[in-house]
Image (cartoon, rainbow, N blue to C red; front, top):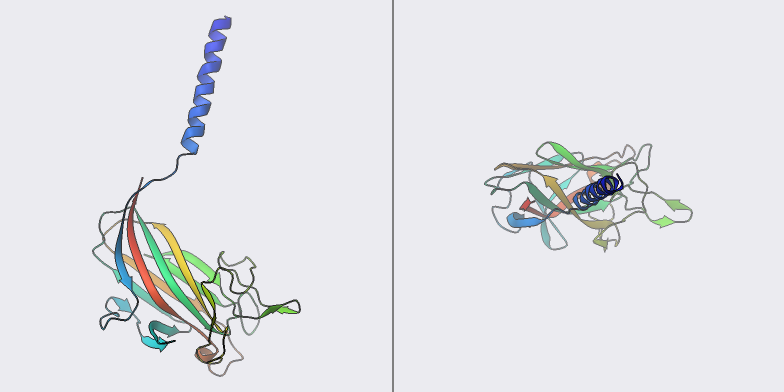
Length: 221
Protein backbone atom coordinates (compact mmCIF):
# COMPACT_ATOMS: atom_id res chain seq x y z
CA UNK A 1 0.00 0.00 0.00
CA UNK A 2 2.85 2.34 0.85
CA UNK A 3 4.53 1.44 -2.47
CA UNK A 4 1.37 2.39 -4.42
CA UNK A 5 1.10 5.69 -2.54
CA UNK A 6 4.72 6.48 -3.38
CA UNK A 7 4.05 5.83 -7.07
CA UNK A 8 1.04 8.15 -6.96
CA UNK A 9 3.12 10.87 -5.32
CA UNK A 10 5.84 10.50 -7.96
CA UNK A 11 3.24 10.60 -10.74
CA UNK A 12 1.67 13.84 -9.53
CA UNK A 13 5.11 15.35 -8.95
CA UNK A 14 6.01 14.63 -12.57
CA UNK A 15 2.74 16.16 -13.79
CA UNK A 16 3.42 19.26 -11.70
CA UNK A 17 6.97 19.62 -13.05
CA UNK A 18 5.72 19.13 -16.61
CA UNK A 19 3.13 21.89 -16.16
CA UNK A 20 5.84 24.21 -14.86
CA UNK A 21 8.03 23.42 -17.87
CA UNK A 22 5.16 24.09 -20.27
CA UNK A 23 4.21 27.37 -18.62
CA UNK A 24 7.81 28.58 -18.81
CA UNK A 25 8.11 27.78 -22.51
CA UNK A 26 9.21 30.82 -24.50
CA UNK A 27 8.32 31.48 -28.12
CA UNK A 28 11.21 31.00 -30.51
CA UNK A 29 11.87 33.30 -33.45
CA UNK A 30 12.42 31.02 -36.44
CA UNK A 31 12.61 33.63 -39.19
CA UNK A 32 12.39 37.40 -39.68
CA UNK A 33 12.28 39.22 -43.02
CA UNK A 34 12.19 42.99 -43.48
CA UNK A 35 9.35 43.43 -45.96
CA UNK A 36 8.78 47.19 -46.04
CA UNK A 37 11.03 50.12 -45.19
CA UNK A 38 10.23 53.73 -46.02
CA UNK A 39 12.04 56.86 -44.86
CA UNK A 40 10.21 58.94 -47.51
CA UNK A 41 13.40 60.01 -49.27
CA UNK A 42 12.66 58.20 -52.55
CA UNK A 43 10.52 59.77 -55.32
CA UNK A 44 7.98 56.91 -55.12
CA UNK A 45 7.77 56.94 -51.33
CA UNK A 46 4.02 57.70 -51.33
CA UNK A 47 3.18 54.57 -53.32
CA UNK A 48 0.58 52.51 -51.46
CA UNK A 49 -0.12 55.30 -48.96
CA UNK A 50 -3.61 56.74 -48.59
CA UNK A 51 -3.72 60.44 -47.61
CA UNK A 52 0.03 60.62 -48.01
CA UNK A 53 1.77 63.99 -48.09
CA UNK A 54 5.37 65.00 -47.60
CA UNK A 55 7.16 67.89 -45.96
CA UNK A 56 10.69 68.71 -44.86
CA UNK A 57 11.53 68.85 -41.16
CA UNK A 58 15.08 69.35 -39.92
CA UNK A 59 16.37 68.73 -43.47
CA UNK A 60 14.64 65.33 -43.64
CA UNK A 61 11.60 64.46 -45.75
CA UNK A 62 8.83 63.09 -43.54
CA UNK A 63 5.25 61.91 -43.96
CA UNK A 64 2.92 64.63 -42.75
CA UNK A 65 2.05 66.78 -41.07
CA UNK A 66 -1.37 65.76 -39.75
CA UNK A 67 -4.02 67.10 -37.40
CA UNK A 68 -7.27 65.19 -36.86
CA UNK A 69 -6.46 62.97 -39.83
CA UNK A 70 -5.58 59.39 -40.65
CA UNK A 71 -2.95 57.97 -42.98
CA UNK A 72 -2.88 54.34 -44.15
CA UNK A 73 -0.06 52.27 -45.61
CA UNK A 74 -0.76 49.08 -47.58
CA UNK A 75 1.98 46.44 -47.63
CA UNK A 76 1.50 43.68 -50.20
CA UNK A 77 3.38 40.51 -51.04
CA UNK A 78 4.03 39.47 -47.46
CA UNK A 79 5.92 36.14 -47.22
CA UNK A 80 4.66 33.31 -45.02
CA UNK A 81 4.52 34.41 -41.38
CA UNK A 82 2.42 34.36 -38.23
CA UNK A 83 3.58 37.62 -36.64
CA UNK A 84 4.57 41.07 -37.84
CA UNK A 85 6.80 43.69 -36.31
CA UNK A 86 5.65 47.24 -37.08
CA UNK A 87 8.02 50.11 -36.30
CA UNK A 88 6.90 53.74 -36.55
CA UNK A 89 9.22 56.69 -35.97
CA UNK A 90 6.76 59.34 -34.84
CA UNK A 91 7.36 63.08 -34.55
CA UNK A 92 5.03 64.93 -32.16
CA UNK A 93 5.08 68.64 -33.00
CA UNK A 94 4.31 71.69 -30.86
CA UNK A 95 1.82 71.99 -27.99
CA UNK A 96 0.44 68.49 -27.37
CA UNK A 97 -1.36 68.47 -24.02
CA UNK A 98 -1.43 64.77 -23.18
CA UNK A 99 -4.15 63.72 -20.75
CA UNK A 100 -5.26 67.28 -20.06
CA UNK A 101 -9.02 67.78 -20.28
CA UNK A 102 -11.05 70.80 -21.34
CA UNK A 103 -10.55 72.96 -24.42
CA UNK A 104 -7.08 71.54 -25.16
CA UNK A 105 -7.25 67.81 -24.62
CA UNK A 106 -6.87 64.94 -24.23
CA UNK A 107 -4.64 64.66 -27.31
CA UNK A 108 -4.93 61.11 -28.62
CA UNK A 109 -2.82 59.23 -31.16
CA UNK A 110 -3.61 55.70 -32.34
CA UNK A 111 -2.32 52.92 -34.57
CA UNK A 112 -4.24 50.05 -36.18
CA UNK A 113 -2.92 46.99 -38.00
CA UNK A 114 -5.38 45.50 -40.51
CA UNK A 115 -8.32 47.02 -38.66
CA UNK A 116 -7.23 45.98 -35.16
CA UNK A 117 -6.29 48.80 -32.79
CA UNK A 118 -2.79 48.21 -31.43
CA UNK A 119 -2.23 51.48 -29.59
CA UNK A 120 -4.44 54.29 -28.33
CA UNK A 121 -2.49 56.73 -26.21
CA UNK A 122 -1.70 60.39 -25.55
CA UNK A 123 1.44 62.50 -25.88
CA UNK A 124 2.52 65.68 -24.14
CA UNK A 125 5.19 68.22 -25.03
CA UNK A 126 4.44 70.19 -21.88
CA UNK A 127 7.18 71.47 -19.59
CA UNK A 128 7.05 69.52 -16.34
CA UNK A 129 7.84 71.31 -13.08
CA UNK A 130 6.44 71.04 -9.58
CA UNK A 131 3.77 73.65 -10.25
CA UNK A 132 2.78 72.64 -13.80
CA UNK A 133 2.89 69.36 -15.72
CA UNK A 134 0.54 67.92 -18.33
CA UNK A 135 0.99 64.15 -18.15
CA UNK A 136 0.81 61.71 -21.06
CA UNK A 137 -0.14 58.04 -21.25
CA UNK A 138 2.56 56.78 -23.64
CA UNK A 139 4.23 54.28 -23.53
CA UNK A 140 1.10 52.87 -21.90
CA UNK A 141 -2.43 52.93 -23.30
CA UNK A 142 -4.62 55.95 -22.56
CA UNK A 143 -5.58 56.17 -18.93
CA UNK A 144 -2.11 55.96 -17.42
CA UNK A 145 -0.23 59.05 -16.23
CA UNK A 146 3.43 59.35 -17.21
CA UNK A 147 5.70 62.38 -17.40
CA UNK A 148 5.77 64.27 -20.71
CA UNK A 149 8.12 62.73 -23.28
CA UNK A 150 8.40 59.41 -21.42
CA UNK A 151 9.88 56.77 -23.73
CA UNK A 152 11.10 59.32 -26.29
CA UNK A 153 14.00 58.79 -28.66
CA UNK A 154 14.74 62.53 -28.98
CA UNK A 155 13.32 65.38 -26.90
CA UNK A 156 15.20 68.52 -27.93
CA UNK A 157 14.01 69.00 -31.52
CA UNK A 158 12.48 72.38 -32.45
CA UNK A 159 8.78 72.90 -32.93
CA UNK A 160 7.29 72.84 -36.42
CA UNK A 161 4.91 75.80 -36.47
CA UNK A 162 3.71 77.43 -33.26
CA UNK A 163 7.13 76.88 -31.68
CA UNK A 164 9.19 76.82 -34.87
CA UNK A 165 12.92 77.12 -34.19
CA UNK A 166 12.35 76.75 -30.44
CA UNK A 167 14.05 73.63 -29.00
CA UNK A 168 12.14 70.98 -27.05
CA UNK A 169 8.84 71.37 -28.91
CA UNK A 170 9.10 68.32 -31.17
CA UNK A 171 9.54 64.89 -29.62
CA UNK A 172 10.57 61.79 -31.55
CA UNK A 173 9.41 58.30 -30.58
CA UNK A 174 10.29 54.88 -31.98
CA UNK A 175 7.15 52.78 -31.54
CA UNK A 176 7.66 49.05 -32.08
CA UNK A 177 4.81 46.55 -31.87
CA UNK A 178 4.59 42.78 -32.40
CA UNK A 179 1.22 41.76 -33.82
CA UNK A 180 -0.24 38.34 -34.57
CA UNK A 181 -0.97 38.30 -38.31
CA UNK A 182 -0.92 36.08 -41.37
CA UNK A 183 -1.82 36.64 -44.98
CA UNK A 184 -0.23 38.40 -47.94
CA UNK A 185 -1.55 41.92 -47.24
CA UNK A 186 -1.13 44.24 -44.28
CA UNK A 187 -2.59 47.70 -43.69
CA UNK A 188 -1.23 50.12 -41.10
CA UNK A 189 -3.39 53.08 -40.12
CA UNK A 190 -2.17 55.91 -37.92
CA UNK A 191 -4.35 58.78 -36.78
CA UNK A 192 -5.19 61.24 -34.06
CA UNK A 193 -7.94 63.01 -32.17
CA UNK A 194 -6.49 66.37 -31.23
CA UNK A 195 -8.45 68.98 -29.33
CA UNK A 196 -7.49 72.66 -29.37
CA UNK A 197 -10.69 74.70 -29.23
CA UNK A 198 -8.75 77.79 -28.18
CA UNK A 199 -6.32 77.71 -31.15
CA UNK A 200 -7.00 79.85 -34.26
CA UNK A 201 -4.89 77.48 -36.41
CA UNK A 202 -5.20 73.91 -35.04
CA UNK A 203 -2.55 72.29 -37.25
CA UNK A 204 -0.05 74.98 -36.26
CA UNK A 205 -0.90 74.45 -32.60
CA UNK A 206 -0.22 70.70 -32.65
CA UNK A 207 0.41 68.08 -35.30
CA UNK A 208 2.41 64.94 -36.02
CA UNK A 209 4.46 63.37 -38.76
CA UNK A 210 6.28 60.09 -39.42
CA UNK A 211 9.95 59.89 -40.34
CA UNK A 212 10.15 56.13 -40.96
CA UNK A 213 8.03 52.99 -41.22
CA UNK A 214 9.34 49.42 -41.09
CA UNK A 215 7.40 46.17 -41.39
CA UNK A 216 8.97 42.76 -40.80
CA UNK A 217 7.39 39.33 -41.27
CA UNK A 218 8.20 36.88 -38.46
CA UNK A 219 7.71 33.18 -37.95
CA UNK A 220 7.41 32.42 -34.26
CA UNK A 221 7.00 28.96 -32.73
